Image (cartoon, rainbow, N blue to C red; front, side, top):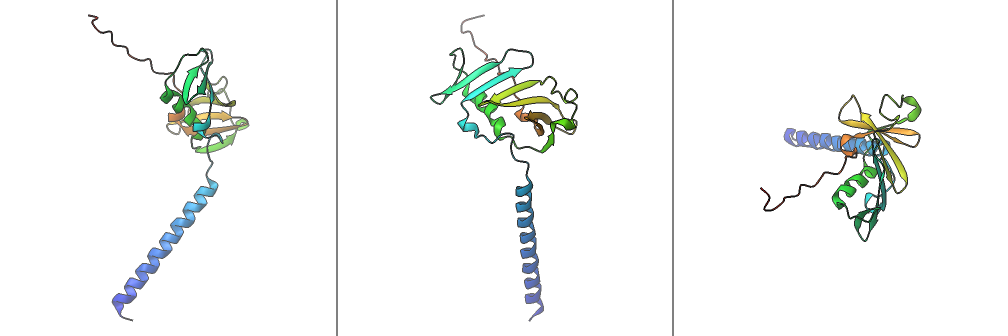
Length: 164
């Protein structure tokens, strides 16, 4: 076998080994991934309750493909779809709730409580390790990206035509 052919063969063998190792690592990571906050499909959620701080809870229901407040007022579908996305939030880490002092991580009382089809998510403070927040789900606490922390709906800016 010529030297150039032997070099190509060794190079191909090395590439094959690297691909095999990458696939093995990917499968291992998938098996050990912590999963999502809830085992709910966000698109299938039909009932949402949101309580921000001490404010009264607001109840929403999805009818005919649109979101409505309990008082019958239509609300922004994008806002509610953003809230329901929390169900599928990828969890960075799960820990038992007893491992924490609930007051120190903002869960006694929680800063925000979001219920999705009756499943309660209690949101605490931002973690010290990055843009993540604590979320209590039953007897466990998850760390998730801060982007899943529910916010108050944005007030819509209304232009008054002719007003000076």
